[in-house]
Image (cartoon, rainbow, N blue to C red; front, side, top):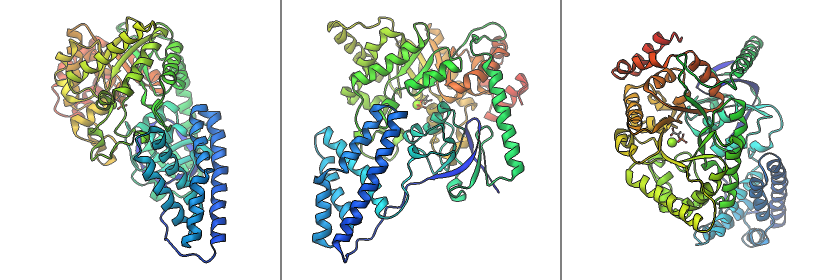
Length: 573
Ligand code: PEP
Ligand code: MG
């Protein structure tokens, strides 16, 4: 038995066999071969096996992820049937007497380089398809396992160095009981997705891939951030009990599903949810969300091989708005790609510091073709509900003005085409770059609302990468530096008669909630599963009392002092 400590990223307990997801080692030696015929046969067998797997994945994707995602695998299957790629590889084996690995790698790379540099989006996408498919065929030639989360068909706990957000999106909840990773923090996007999928997760353990073997029995305790490897029978019993207690607790919370969120002194605050896809709205309703405070639209752009069309986006936004109805607000954030959310098909150059790089609104203002398509889809969908739009990663007022004027332009275009657009769309911004929190007063005159993105605001204020578990101790939501910035934003909003919300993970944190209530935050947006525990807590707190502690809290010296003070005043353990 071994016990590994990590960061509890998604609540719940999972008990199952380990399924290791690791990128296989695809290095090979280039060799002369004796029998080209046999080698060609070996190559053809690898192609057939890969095709069989891709067929299965495609069927699975069709059932669970929809037609559009399944198309990626149809494109991969086409590559594996394309004589223009396969023939030159077989010719090379025969004419140069080299092994299939070398012939495959060299030929595929030649096509990839050729297509990648073409000024044609379709061909660039083909380059990405060839790259993906080649890896699978290579793995078969080398006899190494190529992990496919979509093909898992028994109950497992996934063990990986890291999971990309699109890996996470592919996990099938029926079989994947939980996951644990070496790297990552509470605010990495795979952790955020785990919460919306309600899959227990422990991240940032530094060592699970080193310690856990395939099929080891594993307990993932996402509540306390523990991973137990090969537990004793008593431990399994103990955690089964903890699992049952957690389920019971969830049932208690569920009783408040249809209640409004009022403090003990009768003040209403808005408790809304963060979502990543239209499917997540079920979780919002199921957990009693009063709307959507952050729709991370980038997931519409991920896990596919090309940009989503205006029509696809329109359908997604419309579905969310309609499902929430005319009074529940839906705050949609425009494309926030970059950092740990990549779009391979955009083929952007690698950067030294992706979190400080060409991303989000910076990219959208330059690639206004991409941005305008999204804005048009949003504007068209606006008549189906209560839409609010916000821009991510705003650093300067100039950026906000530019983004807003593109929105106004597209609105005018649509109207002149005779398309109906709502006239009451509020337009706000995320406050996640310290520069904007410091001069929130200036921004407040021009925005309709602020939504504080503490995941990034904390990373940028503390200069600590949110993905790096070594500096995760600097993720300090209660640090007085952060609290003073937040206070500045809320005061600036209120002085202009605007509202201020928060959509970073901090909004659902039980130490932060009393503080934020006292600072006057109007809207709390969080993973849907945090809503009911947050509502339970808020019902018992007096906003007036919390507000009376405001100055004292803001004047504290350290995060620890703030925590101690809040615990003392609220009686939390
Ligand atoms: C944030 O930065 O707090 C936020 C909500 O956005 P994301 O986590 O998607 O960066
Ligand atoms: Mg952010």
